[in-house]
Length: 141
Image: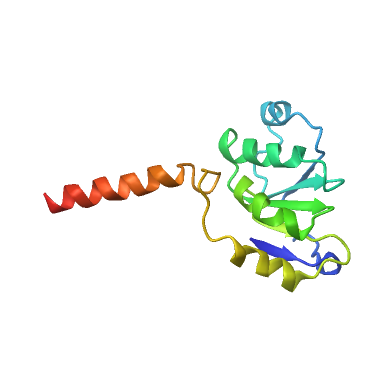
C-alpha cells in the first residue's frame, strides 16, 4: 500500500480520471450510469475514523464491480486502520494531518499473515495450506 503524507498529496495528472465517492453514495447507481468507466483512481472518504462505510465500498468496488485501478483512502486515516484498509482493497492512503508516514509503514511489518480471507487473498489460511498440500501430493504421485 502506498502511504502519502497529508501535506504531500499530489494533484491528479491531466490524463488521469479520478472519481471521489461520498461514503453514502449508492455504488450500484454509479455502476449503472457508467460513472466507473475509464476511471483510474477512486477516492473514498473516511470523515471520522469510526465511520467504516468506505471499507464496504472498497470491497464492493473490488469484488462486485471489478475495479482494478488505484483505490485511495482519504480523510481521517489513522495508522491503526491501514492494515484493514489494505485487506479491504485500498492501494493507497492519504494520512490524516499529524500522522507520521514512517510509523504508518512500520504497521505492515507487524502483521505478516491473517487467518481469514480478504480482498487480496479470498481463501482462508487453512484452505491455502490445504491446496498447497494437495498440489504437492499430486506432483509426488
